[in-house]
Length: 263
Image (cartoon, rainbow, N blue to C red; front, side, top):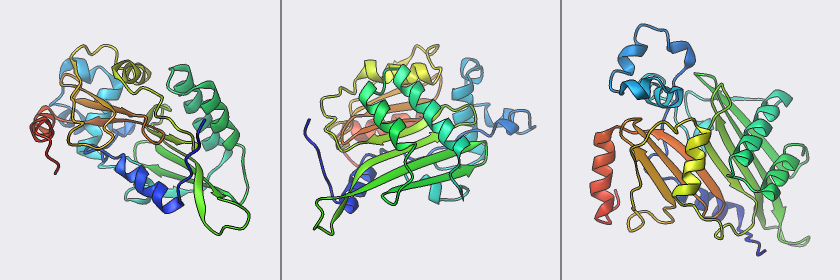
């Protein structure tokens, strides 16, 4: 299989280009579920959505916690950097196995990711951060050199997970330097992610086609009942995300992007 070796700076640019308009979103602090204002925060949701922990959490947190979620969100407020420890790595390994069991990671990809979770050398950089609501971000970057004589480096492996207190991966990015364009990010692939998030009860998913406006768009789905927007992208690796989005915000984006316009 062909390997793609990009300079580290270029790799980061590629990662950032994967971010779609919903790249910043929030999760509900479970401690707020019984607070007096939490019901007000969820008043815009349907009864079905309020009965679903993922839908209710993502929606309510966007009104309460304002925690950004995305590739670099761990460096933003109110995230707080923390030391990586065995317990955090165990949570990451559990999430990786869940993604594999859901059919979102191959056997080879899981094996690579689990192997990296045991690495502790100068080429491997681990970062961890926590945010209100029991959120944890775990990221890893493995740096390699083109050859022994070249000072230029590249990212040979990158992993990024944002987990809820229950271990649900609401953001996932995986890159191992291999060509992933043979992987098909389609509605069936996205359905596997929806199932992993516990969203099978919602039957009104729409699949917008915004490829004319968003480079390397992948696939997306929106449920008005759940007020959730899911994405899967297999360009330059694998990226999965879930976001709260109101019907009006979705309609506005649909009008904008359906015309091929960009913000």
